[in-house]
Length: 295
Image (cartoon, rainbow, N blue to C red; front, side, top):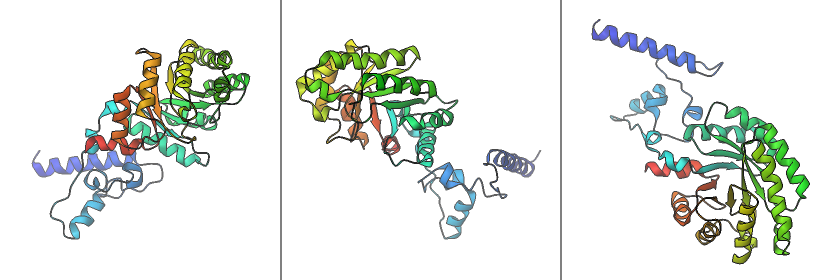
């Protein structure tokens, strides 16, 4: 087989692969690649060569003698991505918004996708076959529902496929000194979640507590059998701080998870939190954060 014949064979194989992987109904013209930049590489203008031959040809026709092809996807630090719960908890989030977040999570291998309970079945379906876990919230965002409500909410969530539960403590009860009620509240959720193989992260809402109350909340969460303590819902007056992460880490010791959430928008923010003792990060700016690791 000469070079010309080999090139022709490679081209035929490439066209066959593209035809097979293109979404149902998508037309694939010869020599144009998938031509689906919104699905193949959302928001990126530097991967035309890899994803769309037509775009590359248009750039060359306009006068370019070289075309840059970014390798950033292969250079992203997977250890950073594995720390992040890719989060979409805003009440106005649509089905398409949630699907988009799930696809980003699969692409970057985030730790989990965290959504409101209604979307758990959808997320379970979207993440099927991937290592990304399904995370949801309980008693969110105020934490002031009854223990029975939180327990039932947890039961429904794990039934629907949730593998991680981020529950909000009863902040008012804690501030009132009703520590036994707070502990029982956490323990009831932990019991149901653990029976289903799910883990529990306890949201303290640190912006509403003083340092003594934060420490007590951490100790209660640990005594109740929770797996993590977490700073914030993202819906209060402030989010995570390095001070609070260090305080929480000191309170629970080295064997328990600490999640920083709320206001973490950059790689530097993430690094600040992990340096203070965080082992998980909650963020909606997850893609921006991990792509910064390739810079």
